[in-house]
Length: 121
Image 1 (tube, rainbow, N blue to C red):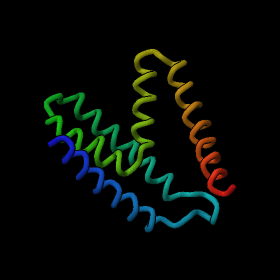
Image 2 (cartoon, helix red, strand yellow):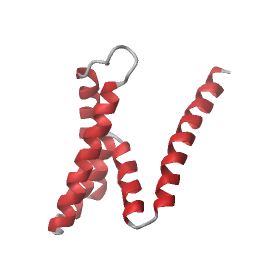
Image 3 (cartoon, rainbow, N blue to C red):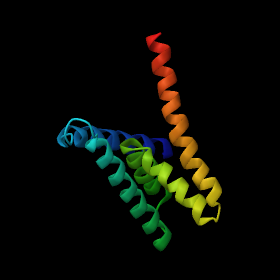
Image 4 (tube, rainbow, N blue to C red):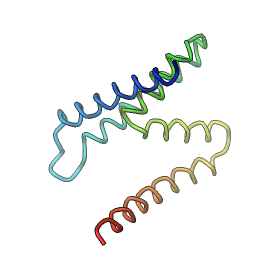
């Protein structure tokens, strides 16, 4: 049942991401406003889910999986990255949070560059 909740939510999130990306025009021709919008909406949505789950505490775990891991995960992984970073910082692990940000961005870009270079070589 958990896999179904995550899979169905992921499909919905991915479709929403695609549709939003198609609807939002690029700002000029350089800034990827669609991706930025998706990431910010995903961060806001995961904040709502975590806040509501924390406040009321009696949400069905499958509903949380459907919304958080499924829809938000299919919509954007940036929301999960942001949640994990905030969790580290709320636990007082500021160095780990900053390190997670820096390593994720740097190694994400390096990994993308390396893969693109390998394919084009």
